[in-house]
Image (cartoon, rainbow, N blue to C red):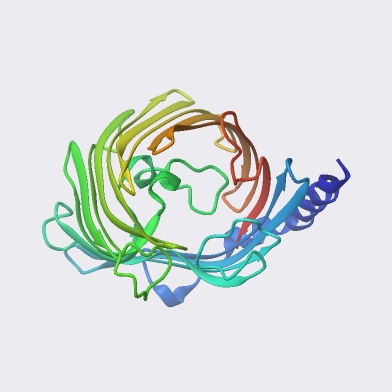
Length: 335
């Protein structure tokens, strides 16, 4: 317990110290970006405690979040989203491959793109830059920079550099993308690529469903891995409850895979406190037989004025030993 007591103490001490400045943070604004724009500085500190090794890993992030809608007198022209982050790792046992080691600092591109929407009143848009891969639940649920995650690890990539066509109709939404397959890396010599897409019902309804596909070579630390996926997802809102489901099947490096995920979450009426329970399962066919990985996770978060967020998550594997930590905490502050 001593190994995790100090990080917990620092976690809540930091939150108490910065809480009085929240009102000031919410009042700041910049005239430089003009109308229909917002910006913020986004900072976070995360500690992951691995119960198997009784060790702590730390992740610190400092980023800029800009959102700007460009318009003419008659219509919107497009939307710019720009989110570069400097990320520092300390004592991380399994860092993302674009870090040199578990004590490295790198520039991380979360989202950085321009979505041109002046062609057909939002029904045919062209997006270019770094954006979320259009597949499954991640496209409609913003989990960037949070402990709460869905299924992108099954595909080995969450966001990528490339171009997409996308649009919104009264009852349908779609996006089809061709991207580099390199994730955070803008330049590479391994020739990866991804062709992906999702067709779904309106994301503003209480019941949302979607069909997705994913095909290509994904860049990893050991070169490229071929991945083929077809998936189905659905989300259902019932008062303060949300229920999520996603299932996909396909191949990873020629081996058949099946992935399933469900989540139930509750958001209190003032939208400050959120709790969730997740269950996930993956089946992979290999030469030695079938490998099964099953996990469950429970998480809590508290948000104050969209500025200060405290969150914690406990995740446990039941079939195999996972590389991810068992217990995580994060404090996040947006100025």
